Structure formats: C-alpha cells, structure tokens
Length: 229
Image (cartoon, rainbow, N blue to C red; front, side, top):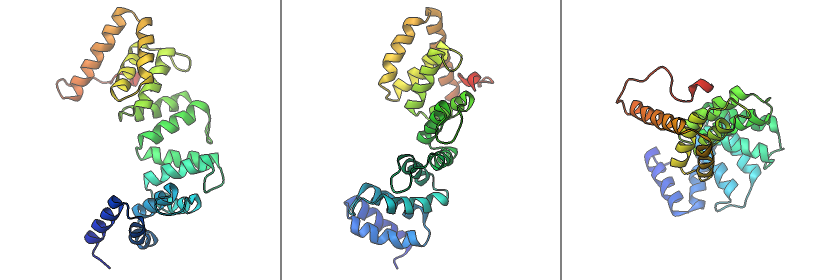
C-alpha cells in the first residue's frame, strides 16, 4: 500500500480529474478501515451519482458511519436524508437529532436549521423562541446570511420576539453584505418605518462594533443584539 502522503495525493488528483473509479478504489479501503473522511466522501459520491449509480441507501450507510464518529458534515447530510426519507425511512426525530449534533459542532447551515426547528416546533422539538434566537444568532455570527436575514426580519416585525428596529437594521445590513437579496427589500421597508434617529443609532452601533472587532476600542460588556438572547 502506498504511504499515506502519496495516497492522499493520488486521491486528490483522482477527485480533481473526475476519475471516480480510481477515487472509489482509493477511498473504499480507507472507509472500511474506519476513516471518517473517506466514509463521508464515499457517501457523497453515492448520493451525487458521481461515477456510480445514484444510491441513497449506500450513501446513508457510509454517511452514518462517518456521522457516528462525529464527522459534522456527514451528520448534516444524514439529517437531510432522514428529513427527506432518502435511503432511510423518513424520521423527524432522527433528522432533528443529527441536525442538532452538526449544529453543536459549529456548522452554520445546521445552526440555522436548528433555529427553524425551534421556531416552528419541528423535528422532535417544541417551539421555543429563546432557543430559536440563540441558534439563529450563532449562525448569524458566522456571517451566514440566511440567519442574519431571519434575525433582521424577526426583530423588525416584532411578532415572535420583542421588536427592535435598530438591531434589525444592523442584521439586515450584514445579511446584504453577505449576499442576501431578500434582505435588501426588507431593509428598505424597515428604514421607511424608522425615525431618522433610529437609523443614525443603528449606523453608529455598526461602526462601533466594527471598530471593536478590529481592536480599535476595548469592547463593552454586550455586543449588539445580545440583549435578545
């Protein structure tokens, strides 16, 4: 067997060249030996039909082995398979369990999914505004635009949590910076409802936050938006 470094180079080359047969031949012994990354990659290959027939059952089997070893990206896809009933029996409880495990490891997309679980009371959890905001903010703090947009919308409307137009302005602005198109319209609508002073306060707080993050000023006790946790 080739040394690990050479084998990794061969695998990277095969994946880059789209040589799926060679990639699978290199991955399978690693996956069968318990390598979580190789298990995840084999699962993805079967789920995406990359050089093999589409096979969600095989995909789920390999992804589960990686997920049970704590590989977050495998946990994320396995959650989606359970939510969709692809390759496994549809199971909301299992979907929620794997989404939560991936979220706890810091994947922003899954933190966003967990926030939605608590928002709507799905996948085995009850509705919980506190947990909803906590998970949205964890994802938003990683510059995940959908979470920033969701926070901005919630704070601008005030239907599910207390209304805070100044903080809503900040989150929607950040969502726009990170590529959210829906946030543009939401920010326009919100700005039309705010006083000139509120807009000025929001902009000032954003500048202060940016300066703190850059180390220009010592940080105060709370960053913006933390009062909603």
